[in-house]
Amino acid sequence: MRVRPIFPIAVSVIAAGMIAVVPSAADAAIASVSGQVVQISPPPSVLFGALQSDDNMFAFDEKQNVTLTAALPVDISQAGQYGPDCGCDPLTPGSIPAGTTVSSLFVHADPVGNKKPATVLDATIVTTTPIIGIEVCGPAKPSVCGGNHGLDASDAVLGAPGTLYPTGDFGRGMNFDIQNDYLVWMVNNHTVQIQTSTAAHVDEVRIITAGAPPPPATIIVKKVTVPSGAPTQFAFTGDASGSISDGQSITVANLNPGAYTSTEQVPAGWQLASITCDDPNSSGNLATATATFHVSSGQTVTCTFTDTSTEKIGQQGLTLGYWKQPQHFAAWSIYTQSDTFDAVFHVSVFPSSFTLLQALAQGGGGVNALGRQAVAALLDATSSSIDYPLYSWQVITLVHDAISSGNAKTIQSLESQLEADNSLSG
Image 1 (cartoon, helix red, strand yellow):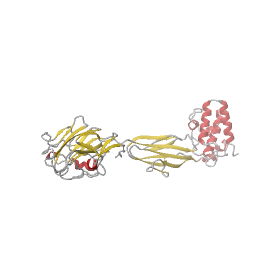
Image 2 (cartoon, rainbow, N blue to C red):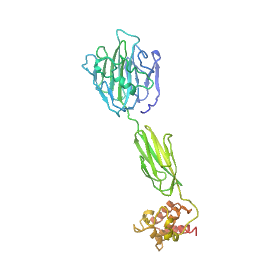
Image 3 (cartoon, helix red, strand yellow):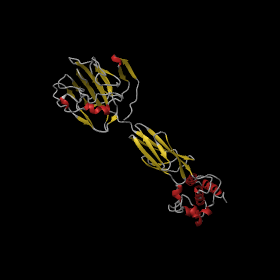
Image 4 (cartoon, rainbow, N blue to C red):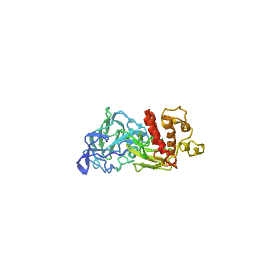
């Protein structure tokens, strides 16, 4: 159930210390009242004798925007006139399906003492949203209720929190068969006219209207890398899935309240350092690389995954001669001899099947020379035992940009830079 916001209200004091209420916002079932009725805030009690007046009924909003977890029976399900000689025996019982979002208002008439003749009051209630059902029956008369106890059945579901109701008490409800009670549910679906004729007991009506569904929730997975700017794609599975890089996020909107998860597939060369959520009810588990979101209606929760590169920056580097020797193939990390050059560096310069090992072994200058040094630099950067001057993604970006430029001087300059870095360890 969505918690109803509290809005500013205008109030005026009436008899017996009650407070008349004029809502200043539309998040209420009652739009207006007229006739012998006063709109009030939910009272402490509507038990017999607790809220009495010879001059007016009382009307107040009950729970708003409740999503029914089970079907709710109603005594009146169709617009029309109900009362003495209306030909409506029985009423028009029906049921509001589970999953329906509804709001409710309550009308209560209880004269002071036992009156004979009965106290007759007339009122008109206008609702903010369409009426979908009305409860008028308690456990006693009228016979037209056909055994229905709609008021009793709906007290716990729709009653105002903190208000005591006469659930199960004999004599509550509308007496359509032997008194002058009547009710008209107007065809405009927003208006109900009520006449109560009350003597020893109380007349009560619950009007159920269409509610607004709870606003959806949103979960966001945010990616942060240390150092920043890494183009590495981090894959996520679960309710928030996809692949993102540093500074990017995955947003999943239009969710029902509940629990959701997202798990990072930590790529080679990275270590998941933290998972932080901006909601105290949501959390991250580093052991499983999973964030668990707990969201309520209308809430947006962001969980940030921060990964730190396992590559170390320094002034070390081994030459291409080291990396192309078979006895050193076991030292290759992340990449293998069969990975293709163009796929790794995101270029189209060599045949599609041309491998990193072939690039290391090829002769020639220009792009060929850069290719040799590029592979050696990549292997240096990803090695856990070498503190290379560049991160692996920096090597990939530099090589990609130089080759894509097609500029011979740019290609030669980068080849010279990488050759120097690859010779730092002798």
